[in-house]
Image 1 (cartoon, rainbow, N blue to C red):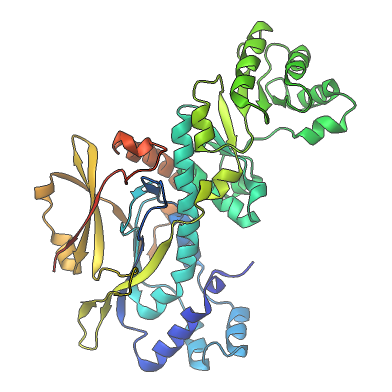
Image 2: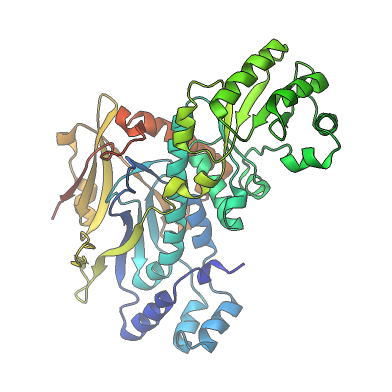
Length: 441
């Protein structure tokens, strides 16, 4: 595995090298992460990945092997190598908390420090946020469609092995309850689920033999996979083997709604009224919404979850918005490129409410003093959306814990309830709330 310091693009190091030579490397700067637009059809996005970013920043220092590579390949000068030998991020990171909603131009994450130290973090921060937020956003739509029925992540085999672990974590932020991925369960303390695949049934001489073996190993509370051959026959055999206390069955193919309905009637007729029905098979928010009236107890979601349900990135960018000039004063900077323009000055994100219901996102742009002192009384009830995750190099380690992960899921549930009801619509439409950028200078 590469060290965090090598999870970069080459130009980050070449920029630092040149800036150290010309003296601009130590200028105070503010960089911000935001997206210019939500993915097509999405009415909100969900922040995830802050905890992972803090772990990368904590360990972001080039190893001796990294430094040798940079030196031997002529990427940076020997003077820069000497500077990198003692690198530690000493700046400040403010961010929307995990589980929070974001919209176009929301200042999701702000990095303040010297030009050199902020520049080196660009790629790793964007890698985490673009992926994790995409997965959490998809997970939120999926769990919203599922309602009170729990969802489990089963996407590990459909993604890069490390991406699968990150996806499991982000799915929790978006409302999932468990994962099939052991590495994610081990790393983040996520409840793990799993019993047997079709191969287990096929390796036995009969389906009955397979069910008896699984029940002997896992007990009658296990979930039996019933669609290897014939669902009706499998359910009959399952109840004969396990008795009416059978924990659950899983259906992984066919018309899931009608099959679940038939399975529920059959289970009840056999006395297995407490046996749960889980369905899988390339589910997404649309398929789950179509199952709303079916007697399903839980869902297993794989491919569509770990690929962001059609939107595997949130198109976030990392832009310099404020920097120290040769006069020692802070100045706004912005791009004017066609279709890629940016707003100068640091930002502060607020959400305006009326009777506890979100009305809009307010993005304040200005000097540190101006955004801190802004009087929000004209907008009624507002909430400051950012927290300080790193304060002058001091990382809030509580944000990297298992408790923080599950607290993010709880926070997300609350934040989603504060949005207008149209936020839950799966049809194309405008963002759930409007965003207003207010320049204070």
